[in-house]
Image (spheres, one colour):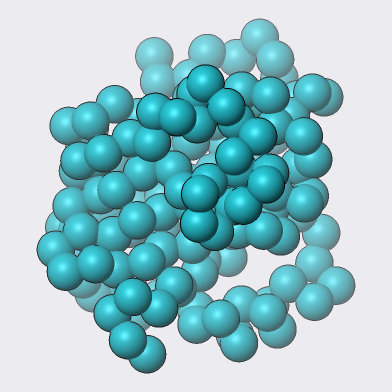
Length: 143
């Protein structure tokens, strides 16, 4: 594995380490499962997130969904273009459709992530419904 190789979590977020930071995004499997994304809510720059907290919330026509961060850290860049054009995620979830850049707090959390082959094996026969939190449209996020 090189430092730029993406890693994956079972909640369908990819992580691409880059020195002291990492780029995070939604996997193609997750994007295919949620369908057309019409809106996303990203954390603001400077936000501190612990592993397991909500990284992004999105609206996919039928419901809102939440993806949790697989690593802890501070948001240094939120991909603001996603707010204006959430279709970037649909068109290219692993490149143009990245979500945030995060300053890494604990490199040991990377030990729990999957490489591409292990993730590909994990998603065989998987239902996205079991792995992503779906919330009612009237829920408030980040209160």
